[in-house]
Image (tube, rainbow, N blue to C red; front, side, top):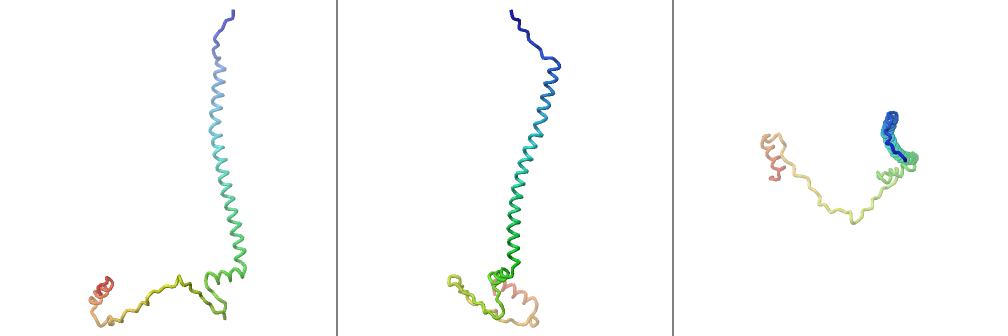
Length: 132
């Protein structure tokens, strides 16, 4: 006859189990924090790589701009500058030629001192509003 007896956990086993569970639970936060920091580190490394590329491009551009030939090319292309003695020509494209009518200058008016100030203000206001 085999007798099966139900074993009750001993107080030592129960305490050991609680300590083990506490250690396991306390390791979750640091592990999660470690994973988050590792992700942030990868993101910052990607940003650093992009900035390194930008620095290299700007260094190359600065070296190019330090040459006199490049400065002269930019002055000619973007600012329309010419050397002394050269004659600049601008080729007008037919599709960009404007046909704006010539704006005539307004007719001279009486000097302000010969009219009362109020009437001069009223005339100016009427001209500004399109009545005069």
